[in-house]
Length: 457
Image (cartoon, rainbow, N blue to C red; front, top):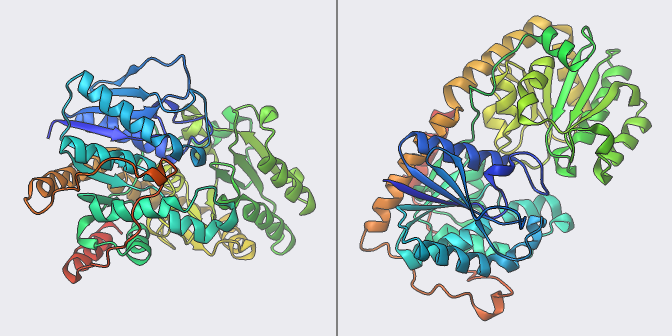
């Protein structure tokens, strides 16, 4: 195992913050690539060029290169608009590999569009394919309905990837369950490997010093919400909980909301942030809610450490990297019992789990932590211990290396050849692939996956 091609069509490791769709996948790809290189592998990350001034190849870290693939306009585009450009991405990636006479032991596809590219690469170059979905189309559609901007072609592509990837990475037990329920996945071919954090970047800081640095009030019970400002993150629920905390429990709290397109709050003029500001005014807590702008990576440790509690209550979340980051800074977490959050947060020990869209339940837990600072401190310490034990990027990379070895062994097996056809069907230059589902979940595989999930908790 020497060389890895990571495909991440819309999420470049060079843009771990900022950009149209910057978020957890950018952070995942950046850190996985870096840690795999530290294990002695050579890693190339293939991502779409969204800026004509970008060099074709950029040295990202020792042993890691970012290859910018020309596919569609060299401009930022929402990821929902990228699927039509994947044939061009695939052709350009193949041409680059042939031009430089490269050979990869593994192609690791991140997201379904990268999977479409990765599957064709694996067929053409006889390479083992590993797929991490990061989010599943059918689950997203179930939660977002008409607000989901992807076409139904996504479902067919994911079906084929579930059938034909040599190994699939689930980021949490819920991810595994969703693949089985919605895609008929064979659990014996799925490994659970979570997301992580970098201990060199995130660790606890003195709270009062952090608040002084940020110019936050030193004595206020402070709640932090941090992440992408999109409706599914449930930030409106957190704002309403601050009103319930005041009106029902008689407890004043300050809510700091970090996120948006700019680190300058004055420049964060987006429809979602304006909607949230209106909710704060309607709930009578505008004076207790502060929008502090996007939090760049060099400020994360300070912001997490300055808070009494971190809150995240999305109604849909494939994994959720921010609870792990908060725990790494010794901050207790109150999170929605959805997706990966229900496995990263241990209810009653590192924080609390609450139903999504339930501001009263959230306010009750915040009132508990506000009234018992020693409980919050104890939970923060337990969260830090859990994060360091289970969720470092170095541990994630070692887990992925085991997955890669299994995938390579599967690819060498005589019964495991991928289909030869790698042309995109005519109708899918508009798009989908075959829609048949595999319903071959094995009992032995289920036992192995469940055992892995229990061990992770």
